[in-house]
Image (cartoon, rainbow, N blue to C red):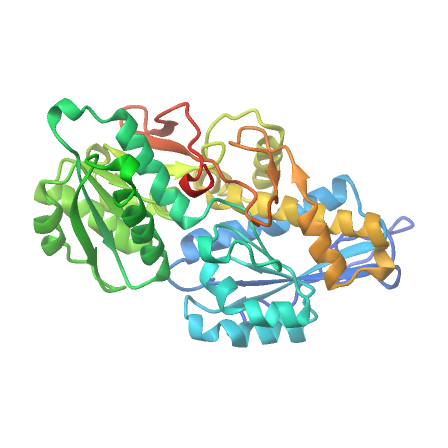
Length: 413
């Protein structure tokens, strides 16, 4: 299913005449003078993840357009094409083939599942891939460039934080994990298992157990019975599943903390707020790699995101309160820099998949307000690695850092 038709987006000035025709995001040159970089976007635009996906993709495309307008890459124009798999991973290859038929030279694949499925295809076709969070078992694949910390690291960081901040005079903290039948749940549980089996954390946690619900589950009484005495419940679901879980657990009497990865509270907080009373949203946490969504961060790139979102969307306040635009904007900036690197190395007229791949590998950006300089090193293709813990301040009705410490991935330490 195609979500949008091919879009040719640009500002081309021909003398004093504005031509109202489809064009490309370029640098003031005619279409025939530009090397067209077609970016295929493969994501869920209409399914369960669409609430967070659409603002993310908008910010991704707007980021590239913004930086190309501010500092044009000579001889290059950007073109965007999209395919909606509606969170049906059986359509991943079909979507990829359609995007390739549309002329795709770079793939923006939102989720790690899609990227893993397509490894053989993109390597054979020499098409570099950009995307957000990764999985540890695929972060060294040379054609996929991830931006944010892996799902495992997002499970480890909160456990490190709990071990450091818990008052053990009260006993050992009880933890549990609620997930569902997606690989993101498997990755979260892998992180929990690794920490539980690490001798450095012996005796630090009492793991109550793991429960896997169906994708459509909205009745959580059995989960409450299992996790009601937990001090912390990890939740690796998203959207309505996450929202109803939090709401019902609180209504049934759960008083402990909820922890999600960056896909959970960070991306679907508005959905959670609609499902649960404001007073019930205490002790909610997630790990994050940079400025908090909706904050007053003075990081230059964050202010550029705010500027672009305000000028492009009437609902900019709602968008900026979620993390999708941050992630999308960074993905766009990294993609723009990769193309710029490729042009500087081989020239616009000689750009091919190998040049673009090398351009991504060479990206190095100081994104202020993050835990480490963004770059791909040691054949580990994930730019951001370190995480802070964020919590919801009920009284102030905003997200805040729960700690000043950046947590590094355990397996890289």
